[in-house]
Image 1 (cartoon, rainbow, N blue to C red):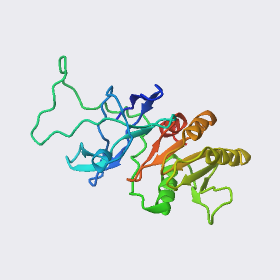
Image 2: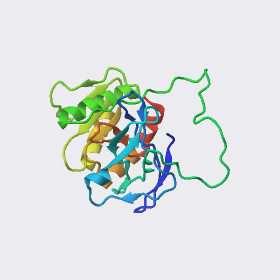
Image 3: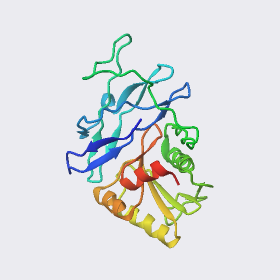
Image 4: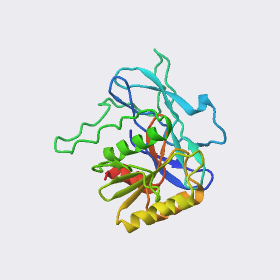
Amino acid sequence: MESVPVHCPACRRDHTYSPPVYPCPCGAPTTPPVLPGSPVVPITHRTWDDDWVTVRCPDCGRQDQWPQPELCCPCGAVLRVPVRPVAAPGDDPAPEDGPQLAGPSHIPLPRTAPAPRPPFRAVAVHGAGGALATAARYLSWLGYRDVVRAAEPSPARIDLRAAGLLAQVDTVTRPTTLRDVECLWLNALRASATSVFFSLSGYAPDAAARAEGLGMPLFVIDPAGTPRPVNSPADELLSTGA
């Protein structure tokens, strides 16, 4: 699914949001159908019903529960992105204004186009080890070669390494701090490497703003095991790959 514009009501910043892709058991990629142009809702408290949405697989029709699409704005607001509800079996889709033109549901890629990156296979995260494994697989999926985990805890808190890359995975329950971001950036600078940060609990506003200025990609790993980009450098990395 294509990216959609998202406007933060807290700081009025505009973002481009790419919804996550989840693997249906049939093997097809499944994406929550976000509603372009619908206002996002700041999350102030969480409930089970609000954190999960029903998504129908476009290939086999199976319906599964997946995490509700969210975007973490650098201002600190966490925004819930609206999703089109799944119609009941037999319901016709709501008509749209204007004439309906017949045509294919997608435009085939030219034969000369490079093959798109296959969908990332998410695995539910259980504990710090699961978060590290997810980040390592995601970096490999982005195109980084020979991603390895630190053999033992590093004083510099470097959790993952690859050719020209240092990455940190923050698994604590508080938002990642400004100091964490700056320390990773300085260590990568000394090693003439790129830095990428993953977090389970998001980022403090000053940490997010600093990473944006440094060009450091920030990702939040959701409970289903999909890293989500939360700043412009991460969006760019997801788009272009390593």
